[in-house]
Image 1 (tube, rainbow, N blue to C red):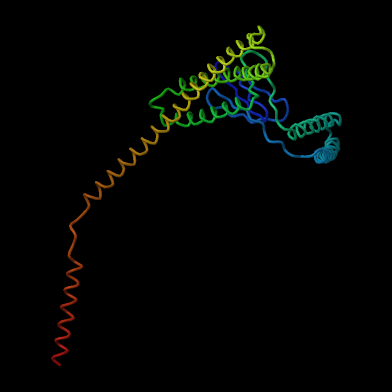
Image 2: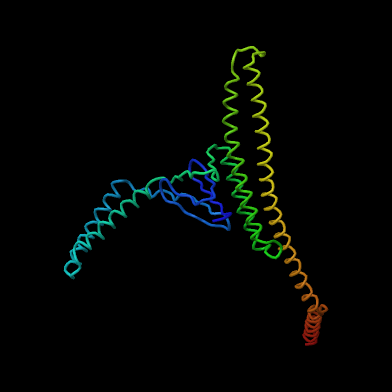
Length: 283
């Protein structure tokens, strides 16, 4: 599947690969969005071993009765029994699998990356969240962008970011090792100490360069999300303004000059009351 990217997240790592991901334990949910398929373990069923054994026993009893009925109907018992055994075995394996916490298998090959460090996992997880925001803007912008090109660019950015994060993971470990080696009581002019200091400078340069590269990708994905969301908000506000303009125009055309009917009614009422009083006074 050329250009496709598979991203799996479990409780201990993030796996990014150009090949479909498999589960080492448990089951998985897969959601495809364009060129990216995200794989997440299904939460364990929580069924205890005793519960699973009880269910299997009940299923076996039901199948034994079914085999007997099928035998009466003329179906060879060994055919029905073989089917029953296969069904019980499948149910037992699936129940045990569903009860275990899901864990992704680590793929082999240079085109797969495994992020285990908490810092790199957190950064890549944020990138996935923003990438979903980017995709949500595409339907509203379909007349302005090519979704296929945008999809390929986004998948390439996520792949490159995974590569950089995997390198930073290795650099992080090396920094820690060199930092621990720096705790010594040797004189500063020792050749070993000077060589160590030189390597520490080199690793710090790698650390800064990979941070800058990762930040550029993260900033680019975030900028794409914000640009699309802001444009959608601007379009929505523009539509609201146009609808309001039409409504106001219709109201203005249908408006009439204020009538004096209320004042006229009051004057008539006052006149009637005055006439009544005069008539009453005359009597």
